[in-house]
Length: 195
Image 1 (tube, one colour):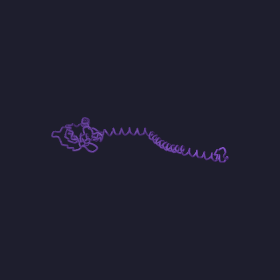
Image 2: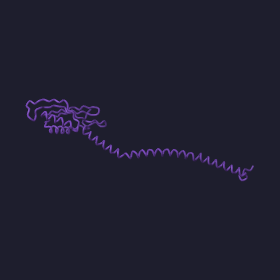
Image 3: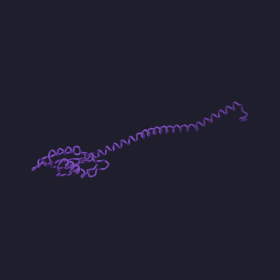
Image 4: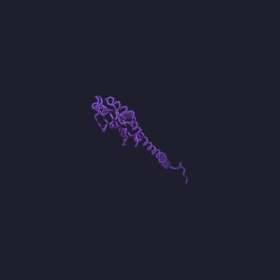
């Protein structure tokens, strides 16, 4: 039997050509187009995710100057709060400050003795025993000035007694405990503060 394609009727030749074409298209689609379309779909998903991340990043980048301004404001606020509650105890600075407040109030500091530090979870209390000479009026001015001082200073244990030999500028002796506070940073212990 002769299987030559030329000797077959035209409709067999056309049918065979159509079958080969369909088989070729099916093989192309199965072996090449389907994996490429799957890879393209994966890449499109990745592109969509990257576009969403890019939009989010652009939104954040647009707010970057606003965030920087907020950080600068918070840093200024922290600096102001550090003046109220410093991270280190500075004996000399506190002595100068109290001496200045006493002089402005016409009081004389007779004794200035730091007491042991009391450590709390977030801060340390630093009590200082102070003895002053002056008048009631001057003592009132001193307390007023301490209340307006930038650093927190609590005054307690106030004992006032009249002098045996008063003069116009000094009629009382005052003993008190001025307590100031030091912030304890959890990352580093404050200098001079012992637990």
